[in-house]
Length: 179
Image (cartoon, rainbow, N blue to C red):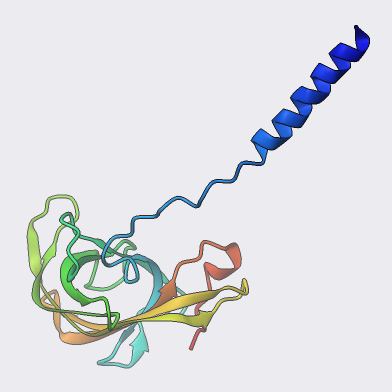
């Protein structure tokens, strides 16, 4: 009787090892049409009229993300940090070209984040994302973003935004000396 029980236990363990070794393929990931341009970015902002940083010790957060209709040639750009300038917050739908990793806007409406009221217009030129071009303090490589912006909030000033895709590693959060 003991040998039958041992044989059954051994058979169950042997069968379980075959069942547990079954492999599954990786799940298919559905990306939005603009996924290479989408993300959360840490940027520094330069006032090109005076050639000075808005803040020499601060990085600001902005997001780029898909539109509600998953457009392949438009995306949202939103500044999510409060900036100590006339820029304030910004939410604008801009044109993008995924194959060239570029984006721009001409007289695009600056939308209030909570009320959706138009606050003015925005022009964005020389918008570009460069993949794998910034080496971070954590050792990972991140993507770079840069663009020039003018707005009716401060029409005589052109701002240069330069930064990198946010990694969320602690040592990367305050990184401001990238080239």
